[in-house]
Length: 361
Image (tube, rainbow, N blue to C red; front, top):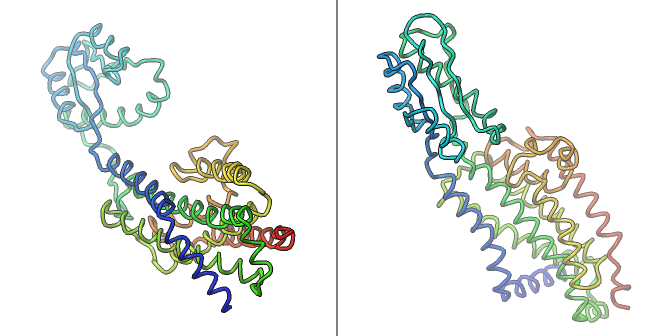
């Protein structure tokens, strides 16, 4: 192991002198954090709606007053044709038309909802929320108690901001990029510069060379991920609910997987152009299919089976469960097993494809 440690120290020195790589591996994740952190911490704007008071009664006026008091809505009262044109222009989400028979007695009155048909999907999403809110307002105005009052209790009592969901995905993405760049891209570069040929005639064994790269990149990955996580916790107030030690284990597992995949790519590709194309072929689909920016469950059904078996999906899911939900490794056995299986596959391929003598020929 003495030679491996020497190689690891050498690789760390090389990386520490590459200021451009250090900057970009930290710059992009922090940029994403800043952008989405700013978006998620902003207050949600009220929904702009219109109301046509066809009843023009004390009860309808009281209903509209209660509607204006609701922070969910920004209410504009006006004529039907005027408000309808604003819906078409996109200035209003929808218009409520209160009929003449809209009054305080028990007789039902048909309230019309004017929407833009082009926004049908948005309407389908908003309709249950609007119906619930209007029903609640109507009960308050009429003084009617609900038959089945519902009390909502948040058992987690934790923030559910988008930035909290996003940070584990960005950390996993950083792990993948640093690890693949540190193994696959470096091997191609060492081959191009003839470094591997020189190392082949030294007493350094291939396993010492590979172990040295792995140790160096693991140190670099842990430091950079720890820095990004500190930025998220201190500046963006993202809570880490789970165990930090178990989080570190997952970071090391993910790094080992992508380091091994990087070795595979570096053994297959012979030029910088080839490794860049191969790297994009492997990393780009995972960036969009592995739940980094949105949940896998929200993807089209045909893509979900593929997305769930990608290595980055397992890394993202495991980190998110620890950071956001506070689950231990024992509580997410299937995900941990997925990580172990991918580590075994990628490591076996890396060993099988790496040929020191062929590189030196």
